[in-house]
Image 1 (cartoon, rainbow, N blue to C red):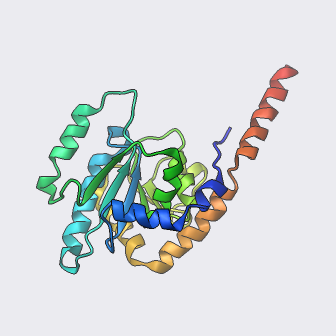
Image 2: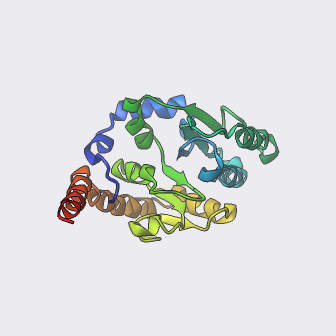
Length: 221
């Protein structure tokens, strides 16, 4: 059974809220990269920090250093050691906490669509995923996606057409893909259009119907 997404909820974010959230993250006229899921090994956070560092170095003279906003962080697993190590690496990467990297923590549910609407690209460099619901949420909001090239994503994404997909733990490839989306408005527009088409296929009604078919099959066995 495939997961679903409430397309209308994420597509109807308040533009004023999105603008306010962008200011809260300190983006202003800087590119805003969104990551969802907190800082943990499975989310490829160390690779993402290295990519943001490379983007910042290449854009520093123009004043267009990106801001990485990280949503989430609550987990039943203890990732404090990994999280502390990633955050401790920021100065060496030339990144400043609360400036280049902003940790938002768990945000109110009503605010989440606004964060997708506020950002310029979703960075989702996971090392493993069961599905990756944040990808569909971002696409519903019209946010281009850069994700790891995992088998689960190939169940519903076409690399290079619906999203840009990069090898796991490849900071250079992630840097190039994020930079491409941020620099190429036409590419971002194509990904946005394709994303709308993808998420339209994965409604909660479809998810419920798939459950019903399985239950009906089990009933008569």
